[in-house]
Image 1 (cartoon, rainbow, N blue to C red):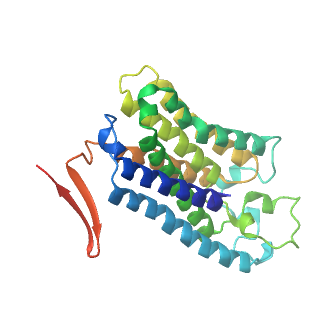
Image 2 (cartoon, helix red, strand yellow):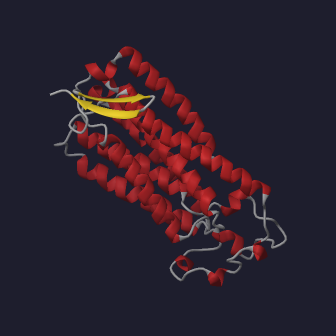
Image 3 (tube, helix red, strand yellow):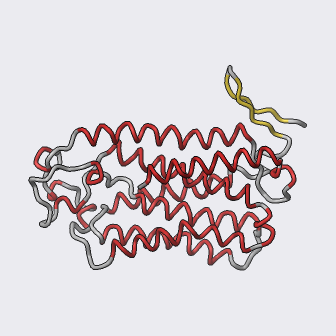
Length: 273
């Protein structure tokens, strides 16, 4: 799921990047953000590299599918006490509701475009959001493939010990639902705050940003898909990306008089005083 979404996002990201470069929209906007080709290559490259490494590792996992008895942690009792606070069985509709909260959060930034000013910066905001989603998806997929942590349900009574563990069964850390939910929610709150720092909606936006991924993580644990540390890691990863991608594009961070160039000998930052 995450790798497919990652590369679909990269295609859209490149399209928006080329469109913004061709029209020079970022130079005409009075919004708080500034984009440049060289800098966006760095952000996009982070997603591509992490996603590429994840694919290599996942292919290796697909070729080697061990049985539960062959793992270093072959019994639920061997897991640390904190993570055993979770569940090895799905509780009610927890998994289904976690899907709903994910979809809600990922779509949340679309509300920004109901505002005329932000709608005028559609290309810039859309580019930043795609960068955020693809970076989160890439790093999440890389973490899942690198740690190959078995999901809680494989220790449950419904799991057949004679079944080999596929790559999806060993993708607990970090929680992708939680990381992507946090990215969408924190991006929404950060962008709204940057465009309208005195808005009365800010406390509600940040309250939603904090609680929505926490709810998603809780549901993933109750659904037997993740341990508490998985959702904590996903929360921190997604929140950091959703928050800092807009921040690092602020004009006061890297303004119109700053240029970021990539050449055959490396990258350089130049300032016009």
